[in-house]
Length: 495
Image 1 (cartoon, rainbow, N blue to C red):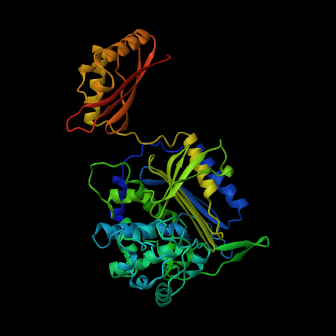
Image 2 (image 1 turned 90 degrees about the vertical axis):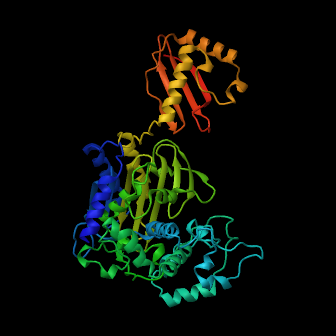
Image 3 (image 1 turned 60 degrees about the horizontal axis):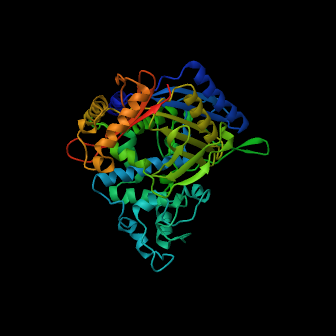
């Protein structure tokens, strides 16, 4: 484990700077208040929450107790089951096997699980289930919460029989999404069959150990008893201890137990995949592969954000990627998230890839996922300026395009720039000269020394402060081997 710990330290140190200012004490106190208030009202015996930024765990806080007998306080090393947040490990393990040439995402799943070959599909023209459809919950199975949680303990032989017997379909494969724990359990069997080792061992060896996650396991009975957060349900105004469920064949969908300190390493690794860049990959999985977890694999749906979160009404789009839900939030931008619900436990994680920041929380109350306080905490960080986002770099070609835009402005002539063939067909040179002269007459002289703000590697926006007005502009390159401009605009704005 010395090597694993050293590797993990190197990985975190190499993660790209998130440009987010470290949250100040006042903001973190508000984050703590949000989670603590929720824990009290939700009757959670124990909780831990944290903020990951700049490649490290910048804040962690425990509340309550690990168990009602010892009354030991919850801390960053306390162990919680994280339920369906385990799917992220299973999904990334599948992608790693794909990278290693061991499987194909669009191949029929029966290629890797022979028991599926005898399945009866809902219609004669149903396509066969693919690995990708299992990842994205589009294989046609019925939504199975909380039935799936109670299958955690089944044996290898019992699961093999379940696979061989087949299951009924709720819809034709590929025709829509229904959240399926069974589907992720099937992915666990694929990992086992393809890797030649139990899925638990493969995930530990290939993902957890390289990241230094020495306290993370599927087998809760092998973890230190004095660190375990015991799960309870709230019933008849009192806590009732939930039975401990052993590790079993269904655990690929929800069996992971971890600590705040370990989970922060996982989040730091995932967040380090953004933005795309040239430096060498240092993690157990390629950055490009990690970014695939946020690939929306089914049509996005629109809904209003939970009003319990507070703030102005906000419409979100939501889809499912590969072990993660992907949201586009009106305040936070892209949110890659998942909750976990389990007998005795509830959990939530939110990654903000565009900002390099993540929030997570674990609780020891049945199906007590702290999703509302996690969103509130992220909004509190946003309000405090701790989530400014990562600036895109100005590429050499975009810098050249911006120089060309300034040359056009100075000369008052569109032909001062290298033009794509559409430019003079869309507007002739005389019309360009008239437009530029009109803007100049309105705003006066412009030094045009302000930096361009990239939209992408080939497009950017700029604003110039001029003699008696401002100019807002946009320049976009064409997809040509040498830099040419396909779109350019100068718009006068009020000072």
